Image 1 (cartoon, rainbow, N blue to C red):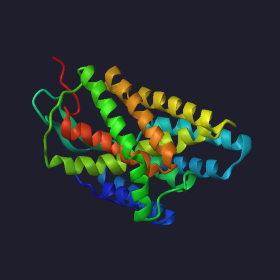
Image 2: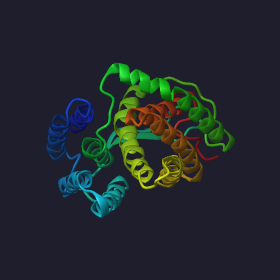
Image 3: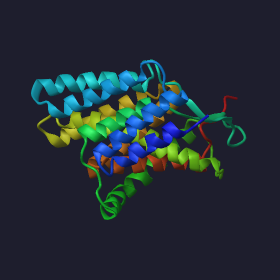
Image 4: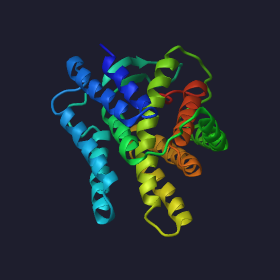
Length: 281
C-alpha cells in the first residue's frame, strides 16, 4: 500500500488556503499518482474532470443557467459521494480495529471522490476563506459555543438511543484518524452541505433570515439521510449535528467554522465515547 496519492490530495486541500492554481496542480499530481498506485482506476479521471468543469460553469453563470448548472453539479456530486460512479476503490489504512470492549470494529479507509468534490467547491464556488491566523481565531471563538452545545446534544441523544456509552480512551491511531477526518471527511462534507447546498438555498429567498433557517433545516435533514447507511440512530444523530454545523457556518460564513465544529464533535465521539458505535447485543 502506498499513501502517496493521498499525501498529494492533502497538499491539494491545504493548497486551497495558498492559491487555487497550486491546489489544482497538486490535485492533478494526486490523480496521476492514484492511477500508478491503484487508488484510482478506469474512468475516475473523467468523472473528476467533469466535476471540475461543472463547478467552474456554475461559478461563472447567472440566472437560470446558474440554477441549471447548480442542479447538475448537485446530482453529480451526490453520485460521486455515494460511489455510484466507477473508478474509486478505497485504500484501507487500518482495518477491523476494535477500539474498546463492546465496540463495533472500525476501518479507516481513504478515497478520492468526496474530497475532490470539496476541493472544486472551494476552488471555484466558495472563495471566502480565512486569510490569517487572527481571522481563524475569531472564527473559532464565534463557533465555540455552537460546538459545546452541538457536542452535548448529539452525545446525549446517542447515549439515550443506546448507540454509544461513555468510554474515555486514547490510542495513537487517533493521529491518522484526525488527519483524515478533518482534511478529507469534514472538509468534503462541509464544502458540499454547507458551502454549496446551504449557501445556495439561503440565496433563493428574499427574506434572508427565513431563507437561512429553512436552508439549515433542509440541509440538516439531507445530511442525516445520506448517513442512513449507518442505521437510523446514526442518521438521526447526524441530522441533529447538521443543525449545529449549519449554524456555525451561518454565524461565520466561513467553511472553517463548520469544519471546526464538525471535527470537534467527531473527536469528542472518538475520544470520550464508544467509537464508532456499540456492537449489537
